[in-house]
Structures are given as structure tokens and as C-alpha cells.
Image (cartoon, rainbow, N blue to C red; front, side, top):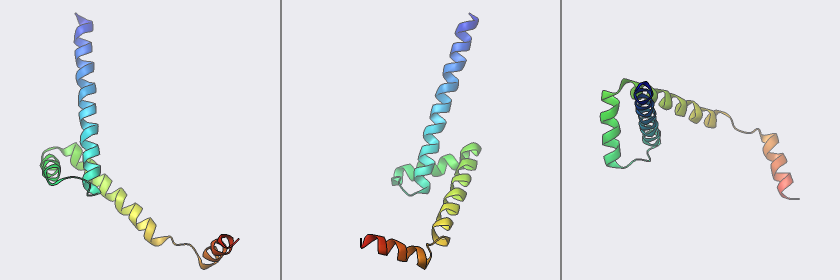
Length: 90
């Protein structure tokens, strides 16, 4: 009896975890504008009603911004570009 209850709890927990991972993936796709209009609506509704997902959304938005900032700030020096060009002519 005890084992069956534990297995039900365990399987429910795994399903919820899988569902949340699916939602997280959808949020990441949403942030990168890879979702359809219907998916956009679903994500927006979920973000309004699910605090954990909303927090995840803001973390992803912040990470994306940091990565975008890194790409714009760090450019190779002229010296590095010259070395690459010289190497490419060999």
C-alpha cells in the first residue's frame, strides 16, 4: 500500500517536472521570438498566472541581454584582425 502511494507521488512529481521543463523551453523560444502567434498567447497567459514561470522568464530575459551586451562590447583589436588576415593569405 505504501509503495503504491509513493510511486503515484513520484510519477506525478516527474510529470510536473517534465511539464515545467516543457514550459521553460517554450519561454526560451518566446524570448528568442521563435514561437507562433498562438504559442505567444499561451506563454503570455502562463506568465500572468504562474509565478515560477514568470521568474524564469525574467531570468532568461536578463541572461539574453547580458549575452547580447557581450557581443557588442567585445570586438577584436586591429592587431588581431591583421593577424587573421595575414594568416588567411597563406
